[in-house]
Length: 373
Image (cartoon, rainbow, N blue to C red):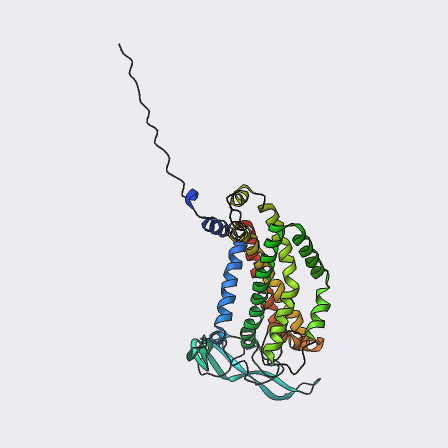
């Protein structure tokens, strides 16, 4: 009697969906696991929207003057009798009573004339993205009267609107400086690390010379060379040039270290053996492999430039009126008496801290996500 022969058919397992993912998809999947990285990404996106559509989000014309150092107007949902009403606020004005210490008119809300609030209300006219004329704003009073959610400065200008407008200059300086630093530093670092030899030796001595300069005194010395009567755009361009000239060296040193390791990998040596040009090897084989490090360095460098601009602006070396920046707005906080009496003048500090946290959190998340394996 013949024994039964059982045939076992092995069905191959379906391919893993993760195995077919691209590198960018793997990075995104890893980034989504980091709540700090995602929080930083959301905040960065909101900051970019605030910067691009600053006029739309500004409830008041930032150049409009009113009551100096008016306190922030609070949003109320009840009237003086405690009844629920549509969200409203009260105009800040000078009363008839005088402060017994400063003998200045006491500033307070005018409860007799409430201001109803709403979304997409009419306000001052502007051009959306510099092209579309409109007068719609995201939030404000329905009757078009000025409303100061973060109070006013010493000239009676709305602090919140000036913060929105100032974000353009502060972030523009940061992004421009980081872009120049990244392009110059990455190019110099890759070329120096790839060719090596005497060229690398002399280049690294020059990099060390740039890194040896005390940056803060040099910033102050170089920016003070611009005459006071110079146009605003010339002063701003010189500040960007000085920050870029002193910031590319560190990026170059980091990229050079990555390039020295990559130049010894087999596929780079194989490209050399088949006669590939140096330009092709640098930009087709080495550059894609240093991009992950460059992206992380960029996200971590932007908050450093924002802090530097805020510090130089506070000292009066970064931006000149009529431009607005967060650092320039902080000049009003130079005395303890102003800070103690009008603490809302420190509002730009909160936006600086949010920006620094957003980019640092995004950079930390990307640093963990660029190596998904």
